[in-house]
Amino acid sequence: MKCNCSKQILWVITAALTLGLPQTTTGQFFKNLKKQAEEKVIKKADSKVDDILNGNNSKVQGPGIQTGSTIQTEEKKPDKKSTQQNTNTSFNDSEYLAYKSPDPAFKDIVIQKYKGLPRFGAIDFYMMRDNPKKVNLSKEAAEKRNLTSLGYAGFAHLVRIHMLKEHFKVMDRTALTEQTKGKIIEKEAKSSLAQKVLKDFAFDMGTDALKKEYFMNDWSGTGKSAVVREWGGHGADDFTENERYVSFVEKYLDIILEWSESFFSNGTEDFQLVHAIKFQGQYDFDKGGFWVRLPIKRPPQGIISSVEYFNEFAPKTHYGHEFFNKTEQVDYINGDVLFKMSPDKAEALINDKSVMLQLTMKVRSVFKDFDTGSPFAYGAYYTYHFLDPILELYSDAQLTRKIGEINMESLVFKESN
Image (tube, rainbow, N blue to C red; front, side, top):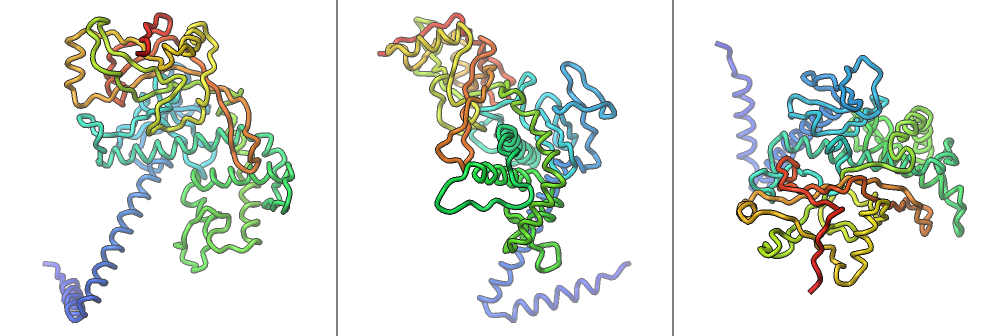
């Protein structure tokens, strides 16, 4: 039998030392042990998520490349947009839209999709299916939340980089821009803003290895110093800051700029815009349905992935113009329209505690202009319009339980009381 004497002796010595300490010291001893254990768990979890994001898990299948209705193997020339699978967390082609990183130094951008388009607005936060107000604490749900949360951040970063393409043309690649005191110089403002947006992208979407290389001041020489959102890391001098910035720009900037061309490539992007909604009042037996307030001109406040690309409804279709003009009238200003449903289905829906009403609409976002009020801050303005008159209603955040449709071409409006 293998002897575990050394381990037993170690535990005896530890126990003796612990019991011999004063009560306050003993408490501090266990607090330190707990803190160390928590840090190890967090580090291990972060490492696991990074493996998933970077595709380093040996059990992960090679991602397919989605091109229209076909799936190609990775041996063929990849499209800039592709879907990603992960067998451990049940990631599948129907759930996600992935924008493959052109360089292993950066993580793929993975976001939710619906009917082949990016899903924005009210996204699936992976709550409990039978109780959508309760967070799903499973490992799989947590990994999905981390994956898509990072993905939506990366999407926003690359949109900003592409929208600021004129800024990047004048950005100083040889040094960090210092603003002239007392006045605003346009070239300096553009360079400064471009450098800030680039740094945020690098820090958020870079792998651990990249962040250690460009955002760590390894003063201890152990490789375990803090990683902070500053070139060169915490406490770096001006020389080191500029050195790390220039090195990053020389190696990665052109790659990032080319990647960003996939986002709002011609100043527009198509989305599936999803809103969490509620029925307005009780079931209307006279009309045979519920009244639904369409969140088109006045989006509801709440937890949403982004409203950045849907600042203003600017219709381009006849049904869009009809809705816009109708809701300009005082009697129809709320935009309440009838959603037809039989009484028995309505009763079942009301009694189902797992219901979380979702309204989907296919739209196009159009970049209009920048807010020039603060040249050192990013502020873009977008309008949007419908691409399809059919709005779909679902009773779950996963958009798997469809309960009906609303046709924008045949709306029944409710008059204000």
